[in-house]
Image 1 (spheres, rainbow, N blue to C red):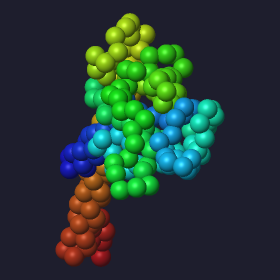
Image 2: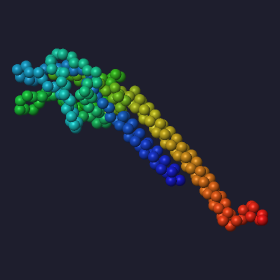
Image 3: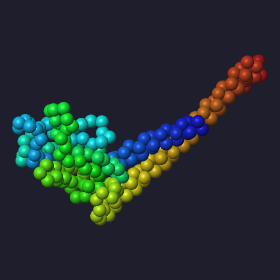
Image 4: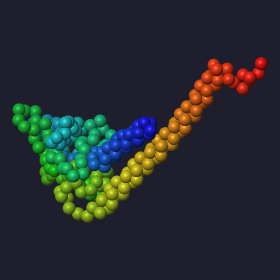
Length: 227
Protein backbone atom coordinates (compact mmCIF):
# COMPACT_ATOMS: atom_id res chain seq x y z
CA UNK A 1 0.00 0.00 0.00
CA UNK A 2 2.93 2.28 0.72
CA UNK A 3 4.26 1.77 -2.81
CA UNK A 4 0.86 2.74 -4.22
CA UNK A 5 0.84 5.98 -2.25
CA UNK A 6 4.37 6.80 -3.34
CA UNK A 7 3.50 6.14 -6.99
CA UNK A 8 0.41 8.34 -6.79
CA UNK A 9 2.39 11.15 -5.16
CA UNK A 10 5.03 10.90 -7.89
CA UNK A 11 2.31 11.03 -10.56
CA UNK A 12 0.83 14.16 -9.00
CA UNK A 13 4.28 15.72 -8.70
CA UNK A 14 5.13 15.16 -12.36
CA UNK A 15 1.67 16.35 -13.36
CA UNK A 16 2.14 19.61 -11.46
CA UNK A 17 5.48 20.13 -13.22
CA UNK A 18 3.83 19.48 -16.59
CA UNK A 19 1.00 21.91 -15.84
CA UNK A 20 3.43 24.59 -14.71
CA UNK A 21 5.53 24.24 -17.84
CA UNK A 22 2.55 24.26 -20.19
CA UNK A 23 0.97 27.15 -18.31
CA UNK A 24 4.13 29.12 -18.86
CA UNK A 25 4.02 28.34 -22.55
CA UNK A 26 0.47 29.59 -22.78
CA UNK A 27 0.75 32.73 -20.68
CA UNK A 28 4.12 34.14 -21.82
CA UNK A 29 5.50 34.47 -25.34
CA UNK A 30 8.72 35.87 -26.75
CA UNK A 31 8.94 38.88 -29.03
CA UNK A 32 11.66 39.39 -31.63
CA UNK A 33 12.57 42.33 -33.84
CA UNK A 34 11.82 41.60 -37.49
CA UNK A 35 12.99 44.89 -39.02
CA UNK A 36 13.61 48.55 -38.22
CA UNK A 37 14.32 51.77 -40.06
CA UNK A 38 15.27 54.98 -38.25
CA UNK A 39 14.55 58.38 -39.78
CA UNK A 40 16.45 60.53 -37.34
CA UNK A 41 19.46 60.48 -35.02
CA UNK A 42 20.09 62.67 -32.00
CA UNK A 43 23.87 62.67 -31.89
CA UNK A 44 25.80 65.84 -32.56
CA UNK A 45 28.44 66.16 -35.26
CA UNK A 46 27.05 63.19 -37.18
CA UNK A 47 28.34 60.53 -34.79
CA UNK A 48 27.01 57.00 -35.22
CA UNK A 49 24.10 56.40 -32.84
CA UNK A 50 23.89 53.63 -30.23
CA UNK A 51 20.28 52.45 -30.49
CA UNK A 52 18.76 50.12 -27.93
CA UNK A 53 15.42 48.63 -26.86
CA UNK A 54 14.26 48.33 -23.27
CA UNK A 55 11.10 47.47 -21.33
CA UNK A 56 10.40 48.59 -17.79
CA UNK A 57 10.73 45.63 -15.43
CA UNK A 58 13.15 43.71 -17.64
CA UNK A 59 16.60 43.05 -16.29
CA UNK A 60 18.48 43.77 -19.49
CA UNK A 61 18.89 46.40 -22.17
CA UNK A 62 18.82 45.14 -25.77
CA UNK A 63 21.46 46.89 -27.84
CA UNK A 64 20.88 47.06 -31.60
CA UNK A 65 24.49 47.18 -32.81
CA UNK A 66 23.70 47.07 -36.53
CA UNK A 67 21.37 50.07 -36.54
CA UNK A 68 23.68 52.97 -37.39
CA UNK A 69 22.36 54.82 -40.45
CA UNK A 70 19.18 56.72 -41.22
CA UNK A 71 16.79 55.63 -43.99
CA UNK A 72 18.24 52.12 -44.11
CA UNK A 73 15.96 49.13 -43.54
CA UNK A 74 17.60 46.62 -41.20
CA UNK A 75 16.05 43.15 -41.35
CA UNK A 76 16.72 40.40 -38.82
CA UNK A 77 16.21 36.63 -38.63
CA UNK A 78 15.28 36.39 -34.96
CA UNK A 79 18.38 34.25 -34.30
CA UNK A 80 20.74 37.08 -33.42
CA UNK A 81 22.62 36.88 -30.12
CA UNK A 82 20.64 39.78 -28.64
CA UNK A 83 17.24 38.29 -29.56
CA UNK A 84 14.55 37.97 -28.26
CA UNK A 85 13.66 41.48 -27.18
CA UNK A 86 11.25 40.64 -24.38
CA UNK A 87 8.41 38.38 -23.21
CA UNK A 88 4.74 39.37 -23.07
CA UNK A 89 2.02 37.92 -20.86
CA UNK A 90 -1.60 37.45 -21.84
CA UNK A 91 -3.14 40.06 -19.56
CA UNK A 92 -0.31 42.43 -18.81
CA UNK A 93 1.30 45.04 -21.05
CA UNK A 94 4.81 46.45 -20.68
CA UNK A 95 6.07 50.00 -21.00
CA UNK A 96 8.76 49.69 -23.67
CA UNK A 97 10.70 51.99 -25.91
CA UNK A 98 13.50 52.52 -28.39
CA UNK A 99 16.25 54.85 -27.24
CA UNK A 100 19.53 56.35 -28.32
CA UNK A 101 22.39 56.38 -25.85
CA UNK A 102 23.75 59.85 -25.28
CA UNK A 103 27.48 60.38 -25.25
CA UNK A 104 27.22 63.43 -22.98
CA UNK A 105 26.08 63.77 -19.38
CA UNK A 106 22.34 63.95 -20.01
CA UNK A 107 19.43 61.51 -20.27
CA UNK A 108 19.36 59.22 -23.28
CA UNK A 109 17.31 60.37 -26.24
CA UNK A 110 13.93 58.73 -26.78
CA UNK A 111 12.75 57.64 -30.21
CA UNK A 112 9.42 56.58 -28.70
CA UNK A 113 7.86 54.88 -25.66
CA UNK A 114 4.59 52.96 -25.72
CA UNK A 115 2.50 50.27 -24.02
CA UNK A 116 3.61 46.99 -25.59
CA UNK A 117 0.86 44.32 -25.42
CA UNK A 118 0.36 40.80 -26.70
CA UNK A 119 -2.93 41.92 -28.23
CA UNK A 120 -0.99 44.23 -30.58
CA UNK A 121 -0.09 41.14 -32.63
CA UNK A 122 -3.50 40.77 -34.24
CA UNK A 123 -2.38 39.80 -37.74
CA UNK A 124 -2.35 36.08 -38.66
CA UNK A 125 1.43 36.12 -39.24
CA UNK A 126 2.02 37.43 -35.72
CA UNK A 127 3.52 40.75 -36.79
CA UNK A 128 3.02 44.19 -35.26
CA UNK A 129 4.23 47.43 -36.89
CA UNK A 130 5.02 50.42 -34.68
CA UNK A 131 5.52 53.74 -36.47
CA UNK A 132 6.65 57.02 -34.99
CA UNK A 133 6.59 59.96 -37.36
CA UNK A 134 10.05 61.35 -38.16
CA UNK A 135 11.64 58.83 -35.78
CA UNK A 136 11.42 55.17 -36.84
CA UNK A 137 9.34 52.34 -38.28
CA UNK A 138 9.77 48.91 -36.64
CA UNK A 139 8.16 45.52 -37.20
CA UNK A 140 7.99 43.11 -34.27
CA UNK A 141 7.29 39.38 -34.52
CA UNK A 142 5.41 37.18 -32.03
CA UNK A 143 3.64 34.21 -33.71
CA UNK A 144 2.53 32.73 -30.38
CA UNK A 145 0.85 35.97 -29.31
CA UNK A 146 -2.11 35.24 -31.60
CA UNK A 147 -2.87 32.23 -29.37
CA UNK A 148 -3.27 34.38 -26.31
CA UNK A 149 -6.62 35.61 -25.15
CA UNK A 150 -6.94 39.42 -25.23
CA UNK A 151 -4.06 40.64 -23.09
CA UNK A 152 -5.69 44.02 -22.45
CA UNK A 153 -8.11 46.55 -23.96
CA UNK A 154 -5.21 48.26 -25.70
CA UNK A 155 -6.35 46.99 -29.11
CA UNK A 156 -10.01 46.44 -29.98
CA UNK A 157 -11.27 44.11 -32.65
CA UNK A 158 -12.51 40.57 -33.24
CA UNK A 159 -10.36 37.91 -31.56
CA UNK A 160 -12.68 34.93 -31.88
CA UNK A 161 -10.24 32.89 -33.91
CA UNK A 162 -7.38 33.43 -31.45
CA UNK A 163 -9.64 32.68 -28.47
CA UNK A 164 -10.86 29.48 -30.12
CA UNK A 165 -7.29 28.30 -30.68
CA UNK A 166 -6.40 29.21 -27.09
CA UNK A 167 -9.25 27.21 -25.55
CA UNK A 168 -8.63 24.28 -27.88
CA UNK A 169 -5.02 24.18 -26.69
CA UNK A 170 -6.12 24.36 -23.04
CA UNK A 171 -8.61 21.53 -23.58
CA UNK A 172 -5.96 19.38 -25.24
CA UNK A 173 -3.59 19.95 -22.33
CA UNK A 174 -6.29 19.02 -19.79
CA UNK A 175 -7.05 15.78 -21.67
CA UNK A 176 -3.37 14.85 -21.82
CA UNK A 177 -2.84 15.57 -18.13
CA UNK A 178 -5.94 13.60 -17.10
CA UNK A 179 -4.83 10.64 -19.22
CA UNK A 180 -1.38 10.80 -17.69
CA UNK A 181 -2.77 10.76 -14.13
CA UNK A 182 -5.20 7.89 -14.83
CA UNK A 183 -2.53 5.75 -16.50
CA UNK A 184 -0.15 6.47 -13.64
CA UNK A 185 -2.75 5.42 -11.06
CA UNK A 186 -3.60 2.20 -12.96
CA UNK A 187 0.05 1.26 -13.33
CA UNK A 188 0.69 1.99 -9.65
CA UNK A 189 -2.29 -0.17 -8.61
CA UNK A 190 -1.17 -3.08 -10.79
CA UNK A 191 2.33 -2.80 -9.41
CA UNK A 192 0.97 -2.82 -5.87
CA UNK A 193 -1.11 -5.94 -6.59
CA UNK A 194 1.91 -7.70 -8.07
CA UNK A 195 4.06 -6.81 -5.08
CA UNK A 196 1.36 -7.95 -2.65
CA UNK A 197 1.07 -11.31 -4.45
CA UNK A 198 4.83 -11.78 -4.39
CA UNK A 199 4.95 -10.97 -0.69
CA UNK A 200 2.16 -13.48 0.08
CA UNK A 201 3.95 -16.18 -1.93
CA UNK A 202 7.20 -15.46 -0.13
CA UNK A 203 5.44 -15.57 3.24
CA UNK A 204 3.83 -18.93 2.37
CA UNK A 205 7.15 -20.44 1.27
CA UNK A 206 8.80 -19.19 4.42
CA UNK A 207 6.12 -20.82 6.60
CA UNK A 208 6.46 -24.07 4.65
CA UNK A 209 10.23 -24.07 5.12
CA UNK A 210 9.88 -23.35 8.84
CA UNK A 211 7.42 -26.27 9.16
CA UNK A 212 9.94 -28.62 7.53
CA UNK A 213 12.65 -27.43 9.90
CA UNK A 214 10.44 -28.14 12.93
CA UNK A 215 9.66 -31.66 11.67
CA UNK A 216 13.34 -32.35 11.15
CA UNK A 217 14.19 -31.19 14.64
CA UNK A 218 11.45 -33.33 16.21
CA UNK A 219 12.21 -36.28 13.93
CA UNK A 220 8.55 -36.63 12.95
CA UNK A 221 9.02 -36.82 9.23
CA UNK A 222 7.25 -39.38 7.02
CA UNK A 223 9.94 -42.04 7.70
CA UNK A 224 10.33 -41.46 11.42
CA UNK A 225 8.34 -44.71 12.26
CA UNK A 226 10.64 -46.92 10.22
CA UNK A 227 13.22 -48.82 12.31
